[in-house]
Image (cartoon, rainbow, N blue to C red; front, side, top):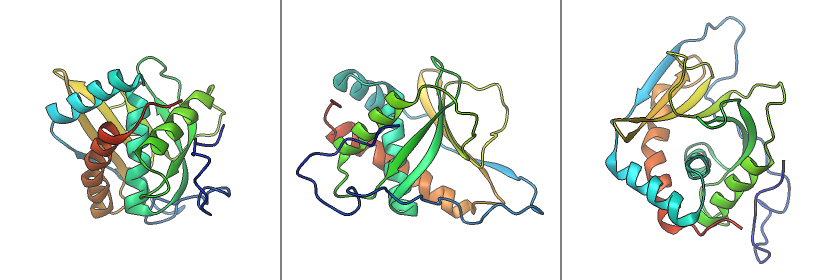
Amino acid sequence: MVAPYLPDEVKHTFVNSAPIALDVFDRAVSPSSAVRLEKWATAPSSELTEEIDGAAEWLGVQPEEILLAALGRTFGRTRGDGAVTVDVRTEQQWQARPVSLLCAASWPMGPSEMLQGAHNALAAASGHTGVSAEIALTLGPTADAEGTKALELRVQRIDGLLRVEWWYDAARLDGYSVEEMAEQFPLALIEITSDAGAPL
């Protein structure tokens, strides 16, 4: 996997060394804890649908690149700066592709850098390595009625409008943590769609 794009003029310890692994969970895996999947869902949104569709066409990117960049910004704002591995699945490429996602709350990772990082990460992901990530971004309908990851962001169209669902293991994440992510995600998405430049 390649490192995310960063302008030459950016000089900062966060981007000039390997980012630390970010733990987005409230609790570690416990052998005695059973998986307790729960869901936090938002109503289908015409605003987010128009933002993603318009930006994807204008910037010449795939929707998953925008969503992945927004997820990185969301984790940065709610869990801190660092990097996480995310399995990405789309309707066009259903086999999970693990990508290394850089998460940052703000400078030096502006909207353009976040989108470029997501673009680079997806371009470098050739296929599944056999190691399953604990976090997933899934676009489109899924055969599973419930999530299969400790944290899975599902984005699908319902009557043409995007619906966002957060599936999570309640043994690993508190509901208020997921609610905070769910509240930050549309703000991060609009930041990316409004202010990011096209990836190189």
